[in-house]
Image 1 (cartoon, helix red, strand yellow):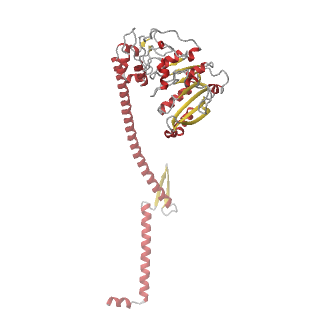
Image 2 (tube, one colour; image 1 turned 90 degrees about the horizontal axis):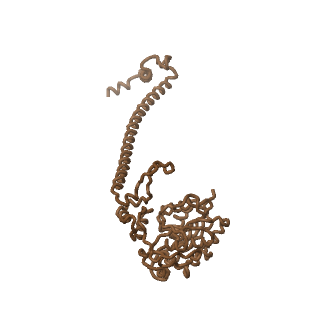
Image 3 (cartoon, one colour; image 1 turned 90 degrees about the vertical axis):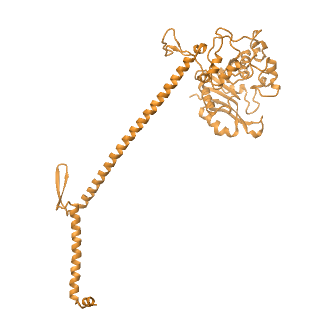
Length: 448
């Protein structure tokens, strides 16, 4: 209570002096704090020296530019820190580049080793070849040495790359007596072709000739005549005469081109003679799309027994027909009609030079049973052999309805043909539920 009494007993003058002293103390503290801050940033000096090159400028610490100097020092510190970080990142990038170079080098070495290994395996495999197979594979030195046109002093006999995947079958095919009669292995050889061993290697043997062979029927009668049974060797086929083949269309069961051999009473007699509907074009209608006489030579892919080529020959157009002998002597039958057959699978590159053919035709063979990429390669190959303005007659291409616009129309468009005619319709021979469709089209290779 005494202390309270003491304060209450002070007069107003003493209280006023105390208030002034307090304010002076606060002001002194503020001045001291500011002075210490200035001295801290000015290195405790009354002046600050900043060197630029060889010049030395003196600036009082109370200058109005002191804040700019402070910003400069902070920026300089930040730049120094950034430089250190960049140096660190550069070192890390250098290490990463070294690691990538090392990995790429290892990969290249591995690839080279793998390629060398493959080459060594191939050389070893070639060394294991014996007899006729080794002679057929080659290579063989040219008697006159290096030839500029060939670019080599060796000649490599052609043989399908896939032949090497089937060494046992290949050895069996090449197992014969040189200079003697070839084995009766037509179907075995064709199966090897269809596995990709195409072309087959050449053989030094003679195929057996049919017994009782007689001269063929002369043109033009041969185009629509059934040849004699003595024109071929029947070992490879279920039917043993042409009468059996002609009547096969009337029997049950599936056969490739079942009624193709009936030239007198079946569909072959009327094929391509008139436009029966939107899908069936006539030869005359197609030829009328080009100037008269400009369609002269062509190709029919998978032409069965050769009737398309026969119809074209009647109009002065020479057509080569590719065909396989699926349980029937299709190639021999085509030849007996006076036409040119070619025993060639759909996977084989067309053996014609670029821009040479006037027309290419294919019915049923080019369809959705072929893998998409193989089909697209085939379409571009057709484009290649056609001359500018040449025609590609796609006859009854068939596929599932959902594939038409999603897969095949874009594929045809990518190939680059112009559309002359384009017709689609339902394929109903196996029922409507299967949603199968036909496409018939006449396409033209652009002139430019």
